[in-house]
Image 1 (tube, rainbow, N blue to C red):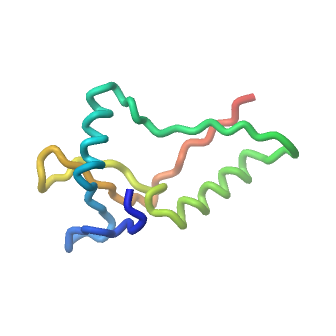
Image 2 (image 1 turned 90 degrees about the vertical axis):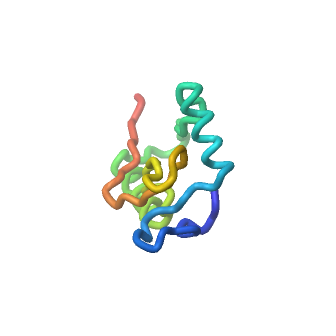
Length: 99
């Protein structure tokens, strides 16, 4: 995806970024194949113990700095069969501790 989050923005909402034709094709393919391209990451940390609170805080700082990490995929209401990313300041990435 583009490094400039606010590229191709509709004039009425600077918190949205329209997806390119290639990005839209990837989303449609993923939907056809039951979430084939779902994003998720499992981290296995070795070394000194890092508390869940510390990791949560660090991830919160990352989300504050990077708009994509605090955005939701939405259907574009102005163009059928296309999508956009919309910033949501309330969005928090889910972090689970697996013992």
